[in-house]
Length: 125
Image (cartoon, rainbow, N blue to C red; front, side):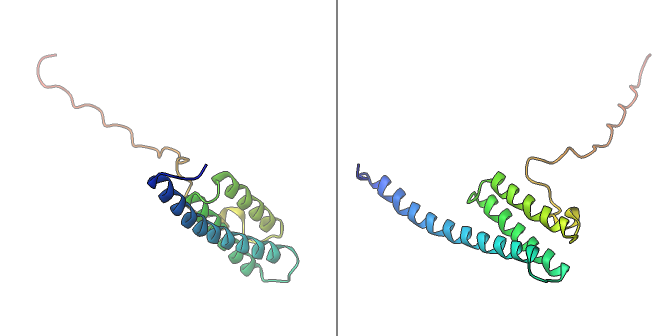
């Protein structure tokens, strides 16, 4: 059925714009991931450059997941594969190459200081 209402037409127009923007981001992510895979597999590249290219790919995946262009689990799976490949080659350790900030909603509660004891009441005992 054809879109008839004004809001449906507007939604279709904005969907086209969104699809174009998402396509460009997805293309950038794919390009960076492929470059990282190539540097990790066959080409003789310095280990520091391997790590840099891999980290660029991880950042692109993180940005796409944050924007909702890629599903967060999809991005995490791809990042895990890249980091596993990097670790296998003896590049930067997985902990050092990974971003320092934890994912949203996954933070462990910081150790809060113990509450101070209540002040003693003045008066009769």
